[in-house]
Amino acid sequence: MEEVEFRGDVESLESMIEDMAHRVYGLAKNDKSKAAAKMVASRLLTLSGVKFEKEEEPIRPGIPRKEEGHNV
Image (cartoon, rainbow, N blue to C red):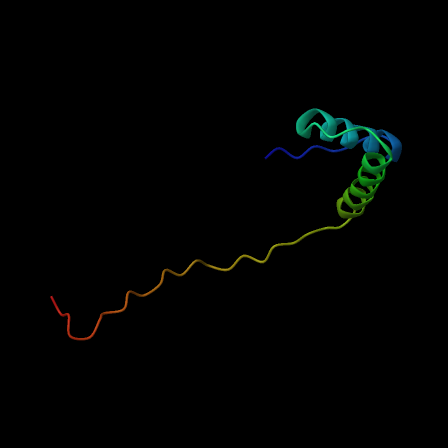
């Protein structure tokens, strides 16, 4: 997935989110959709300021267990 940096104000981000919900999901543009878009925009902007670091652990394959009494 390509990382995209948003450049603009909060209102334009809210508008983009509401338009996407209208086009993709067919949701009506009303006070509820505006409130939801505002909440999502706020959370996205908060998350964009947080640096996430992932600790990588080596992948260890599971050791196959031998069933007792079934030695083939």
